[in-house]
Amino acid sequence: DVYKRQGVMDEPISDLPVMLTVRDRRCLVVGAGGVGVRRAKLLSEAGAHVVIVAPQVHPSARLIGAEIYERGFEPSDLDGVLLAVAATSDPDMNQAVSDAANQRGVLVNRSDQAASGNLTFMSSHRDGPLTLAVHTGGASASAAVRIRSLLADSLDPVWGELLTLALPARHRIQAGVSDPAKRTALLRRLTDDEALVTLKTDGESGLKVLYADIMKDLP
Image (cartoon, rainbow, N blue to C red; front, side):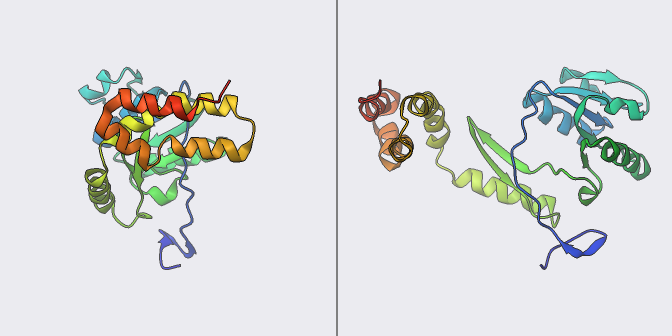
């Protein structure tokens, strides 16, 4: 209960860490400065249909492939939007975007006051299907970046490759094994210590031999 939301001192932070699928979904970014462009890029990399609205647009924003409107924000910009990012240098405008999004049930992130929105961009590191994400409850964005870097540097680089190679085998086991206990046991073997060591010592070909043995009784 030590950590409290900004402006709501009696409410402890209890955010839910989740992964949000935005592929092919319309996502709005209001503001096209450094922060807005970075978040628009993250959304685009996740497969979102990104819409940028800002009177002035940083040149790098045009490299994202977003739909761009060089004007001020209008509430109708939120029509059909899953997620809105308020990333202008004007707190009143960010509040207006946040209020309009809340009225429509649209998820909203505020770059200037994270606690005023209902979604936060975590400091993250990706390696294939693996994602490391760090959130400090609003205490320090720089600490989140530092902790993320420490975790990423300490992670065995083989993990990303192992998880990439395990995905097809996982799908086959899920489709071909009906018994829950047996299915769980087989899935665990795909990424256990034996699999990790096999990939390190014998490479992808050796791992495929191991996977073939694990799945030898599958139809």
